[in-house]
Length: 479
Length: 75
Image 1 (tube, each protein chain N blue to C red):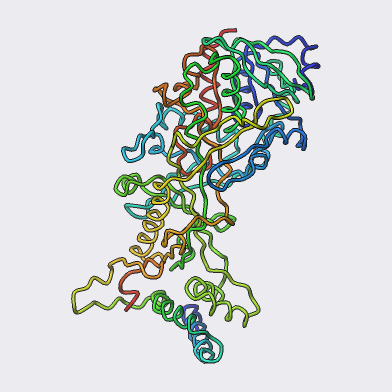
Image 2 (image 1 turned 60 degrees about the horizontal axis):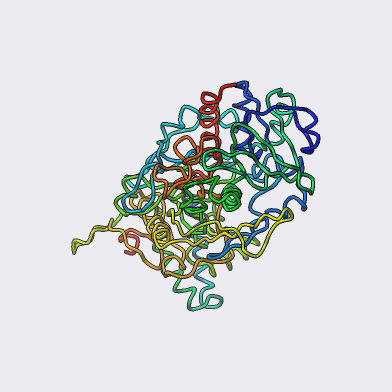
């Protein structure tokens, strides 16, 4: 069932066991799992079926620290959530991403990759993916890794009919849970804002917040403030350890054989470090995106030359009435060190239309990441030269210790952390089952529970964790 | 003419054109860039590495002007 307002939903007299906030990849996946298990669940979606400026305006916020995107362009607030502008790149976090690293404080998850692997066939169905293929080592230091460019499932579009037909799932659009009320053991209700006005309170036995990598923290911070710690009793880490995937052009390359690595439809291939190389160099994970320019014959030669002698190559390409770029570009996205100082706070000066403080994001890249970028490119370049696969040039600003450029990709629009998973209540917010520490009936879904970011796009792992949480709750909740 | 020979012929023709226009069109900076570039490009013609009589490892990895090269690339 899908309702356009909370008013319409109330008239249906639906009795939910679970109240789930958000209809993005995590929320929709968990709702479908619960619905399939016969558990009645209401999904509150703050936006409508389509994008609107009015809804999106709730996502405005401020950033403090390094350059970052405006917060209202880096996520979407309507049915299907940010899957509506997702590029569709898929890969599960690596096994070593779950392991603690002695050289990077506060790394390590309370679960391993083996805990989510049983859900990967289900994830493949949901995200419509081909088979995952194992990484291919090209040296002791570098792996050629698979990053699937999928068709980018829009969860709102793909599952709208199924949700509408479901007797166990009620999706309520235009309905925003502004705060949760709690007594330090249980969430007792959620205060609602629907179609531009307060809409009362909804109650359920269980609450799951899947509102995104910024909003989960904001909702819980605001709820905790309003209920004097009654929603997140152990809040030392709430909003903290927020992470992104910084992404910058790292240099370029000349390849010996342009058919050595199979590239995708965008002429791209991906490379990451081996766990042994990360440990030896004490760096974090990273992904190098090698983009081949598909030039044939003499154009390829000039493009190779463009890497080393750009002025001469420009003159040569002018002679051919062509505009040729260096033959292979290297972009690097890397794992961020989880730092408590990278955090989401509530704005002290700015509120949204419902009176809820907006997000103020404090975010900086660390020296360890800067070293990861430089040493990662050196690793890749060394492997390419040793194996005679090509030669790599590191961008001047990286080699010279210059500032991060301000006109590049910057980051992946991947919002992770803030309600991280863990066993230490001072450094985490949820346990290994995504249940908020100290609360009996409050769970969190989505990338806000990530302890570390790895180097790859998060949606595949988000969906796997959502399948796992859905399975867990299906066993815990009795109807 | 086979594909390899054809490609080689192309490269030779291009390099000749470049050289003939060097003095007229190319700045001092560009000549320096080219001097760095061309030895590296020679690698891709599959020339065998020359062993160094002084015992310097031709496969040693060196960083020059941002490039990660084998020492033999600079020979």
